Image 1 (cartoon, one colour):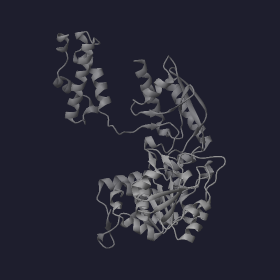
Image 2: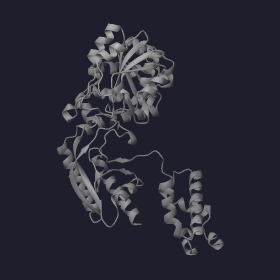
Image 3: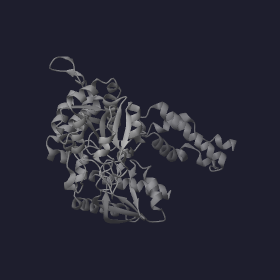
Image 4: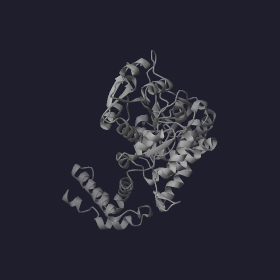
Amino acid sequence: MPSLFRHLPSVDAALTALTRESDLADLPRPLLKDLVNRFLDLCREEIRAGALTRAADLDLTSLSPRLLAYIRSHSRPRFRRVLNATGVVAHTNLGRSLLADAAVEAVTSACAHYSNLELDLSTGKRGSRYSHVEELLCRLTGAEAALVVNNNAAAVLIVLETLAKGREVIVSRGQLVEIGGSFRIPEVMAKSGARLREVGATNRTHLRDYENAVTSETAAFLRVHTSNYRIQGFTSEVPLKELRALGDRFGLPVLEDLGSGSLCDFAGSGLAGEPTVQSVVADGADVVSFSGDKVLGGPQAGIIVGRKDFIEAIKRNPLNRAVRIDKMTLAALEATLRLYLDPERAQREIPTLRMIGTPEATLKTQAGRLARLLREELGGRLEVRTRKGVSRVGGGAFPEQDLATVLVALVPLGGATVEALREALLHTDPPLLVRVEGEALCLDPRTLDTKEFALAARALAQALDGLQS
């Protein structure tokens, strides 16, 4: 065994050999050296375990293929692109909404150049970063004023901290939700300093429940979008207009956490039952908060719109500095909102809206094209079929509502299992995210752009090669 160790190449020899690989030229030398050392340590472990027993297998020529594969695999950025073939449009684990080209260009410009982030160009004096999007948000929603923070959880927190700290906020028991990442309304309310006063039953809450709960300690009524769950059957909740009238009687504001707020009516895509931000403002909510990176199709942001006096109070809250947006978010959000000024253009150019609105007939054509490509390139290794299926909006929006689609269903041939292939696809370059239904691995063209079909085929080939080796 000691003699085998002496046959391993030196670190310097390995580094010299790697300099000839053009795709590794930009790697920092300290990182490359560290990876070479780790690879050689792995070889030493294999020698000790008896997995490497011949000196001929330990010279640089013999080890080079493994060394190159190891370096390429372990030098990739941790945060990187993936291919989304799951059919979930605003997939939380995959970064939610894709930005429109106009938003990407705006972010690039904001990163590459100085900007008037907090400069009023009309006076040359310090300005407000929110002024760049406030007018747009008011025009699009009908609200009097607007503010943007870094996400909707922060929006709910700062609204409650500003308007209800130390007092009670009345919420229907059926709306005390927990969404992804353990975001719970009662806990956020506690952090804000407001006291929760829950009313009604889990499935039914009436106007009298709110009315009977009002005391001198009451600061506001709060309605919460139930995000990714629904109670069905014997249910009842108070419409916003009725709660608005009750608020007027008692002089109390009505707050609305819309969660995944939408500026579009998606009924034409077969999705119904979700209020738009405009309708909630029109029905009398004093303050409305919603996300920017879900069905809005913009960057991660918590958008707050509503009555001017309330929004101005929220802006003055010192907490606002801790949750404010940066220049890249601001640039992407403004570019996205500008597209909404022309609804037809927004539908074409905002990827989230375009994917949600893609008709089944188009998806059938795209699925057929992808299936043909996979049969041509991998037909001897995969059984390829198309079949009807469903997509989802994701991000907590339109729960339990399906979008009709056509899937490309794959079954590996030659002994590999569907689950093994799914796991292998997590390690391809780029990784391909799919879903498994029954005995097949399924790709949904709703979220896989036609320009990505060749990349998906390559990822499948890489995964199958890895399983065979």
